[in-house]
Length: 398
Ligand code: FEO
Image (cartoon, rainbow, N blue to C red; front, side):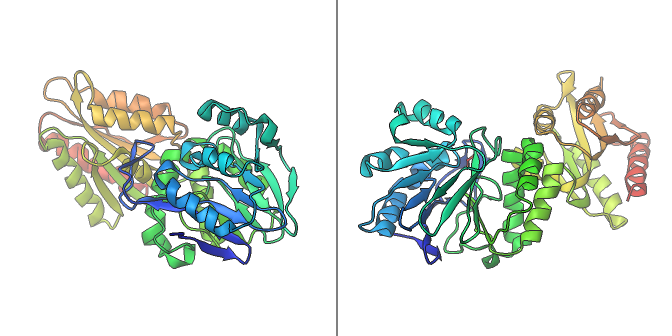
């Protein structure tokens, strides 16, 4: 049975939600599921904007068929060619033999790569600022490379002033009947999963996000329609402020995130004692065990917080592996503009602080706090004094 929702009199949401997916991109847990949004514009010429993931392709095709009724499908606009949005292309090509595919040249090339079909005769390649009249609606295309693949474009519908923004402004989470942002408590329901989605998937491409935000700054937008998560018909300042901070890699909150690895609980003990010292002074603090908290959550917290404390044992003459993986990911995602403290542990040769400092030193504009705390197996009077001094340095920075 069709499961659609009208966005305007002539634009219908025809996507689907998946609550059985264990790992998005086979990497990220999605305990709240995921939505794959697709939009149908009916006019003199009918246009579908993007398809959906294979997991919901049955529901998606039923939705499109029902929303079109007897009308033909003239255009499929492909804003993004990642498979979570393009699994329906083959089915639509067969079902609607007169349908043309509208996409960037790079996206058209990817269709051939993924599906082994040459769509040249059915393709309308578009470039920056090209337009496509549908009747009363007109589509205008803006390239948005690396948000989050190189072929991406945004589509703007001029009459109703809707921006179809591909992965940008999206979030994890199934929709479950709540299609609009004003049907969510943004801070508690939308923000944590949107931040985790942004930081892990788009986080590396801050300059590209900045470029497209600048390009669209004079465009009048009534709704933002992403490929994942709710559609925005208000709260634009809230949304754009988050995207500004994330894309500039500026912290959202003045807060401390203590990230620790611990084999037998001694480094964990130091992390918790440090957290108590900071909390006693009213400083917002969160503590995470890097071995049991998913990397994507740790990365999202690193994007949120102004201050990080990294605490880990020395392992094989290096950094405890879970911490080492986290630091490599943060570097690859271009984390910047943070203040960082260090706690190392080692029973006979503690060396991991220097190595953690070196990795953090490869990120831009990071302030490293002193002293570095060195624990020999378990906290003792001398290392506790160092920990108090590190807490003092953090407190002095607030
Ligand atoms: Fe939702 Fe980059 O795909």
